[in-house]
Image (cartoon, rainbow, N blue to C red; front, side, top):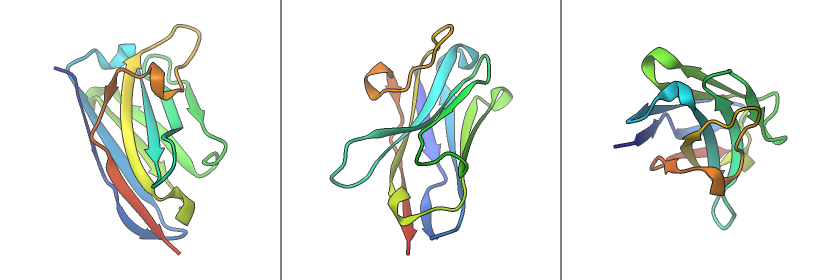
Length: 126
């Protein structure tokens, strides 16, 4: 059974940092792309950052470039999202998602992802 379990969310002041974790199980971690999405109240879910666990290639949404860093620890089957310089507009429920990797490409959109975690709340106060 595929499982993705996020943790690390919380309340932080603007300018602060958080690191989210996503522990994966039930599939071959190296053969998958992991992506972090977020959904703010009243808004559509959007892609934040993705990583190809085989090649290590990454993608970031423009809104988080230079502030967020995605990484994976293959030995722990865990993906991390380090979030620095947080802004109130980063407030959302953050989801980890996984899908089989695409050779020569990277899935970035919600519909491309097969497996989802339950989400973790990130709240940034001004």
